[in-house]
Length: 93
Image (cartoon, rainbow, N blue to C red; front, side, top):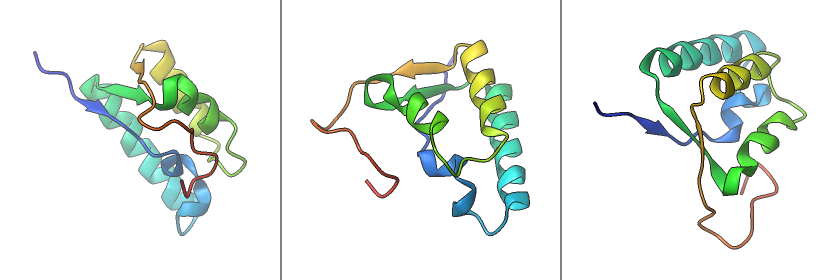
């Protein structure tokens, strides 16, 4: 069995990155359904700090919490070591 592994940019959950919150909700619903159905692994980047960063995004969509909870419940998150010495502090990095 081959398992897919994904690295998601935090901006995927940032509703300001979309034209509207409705479009954001549709993309997040599709993302959740596909990743949970596929039983994919999600990289918890920057030594596991990715999850906390996404949880603390001030402009995250309301459904982000439920998606992250599903990833945690199903044990899809996998910590990954940082490739850089400094962790990003903004979406632009």
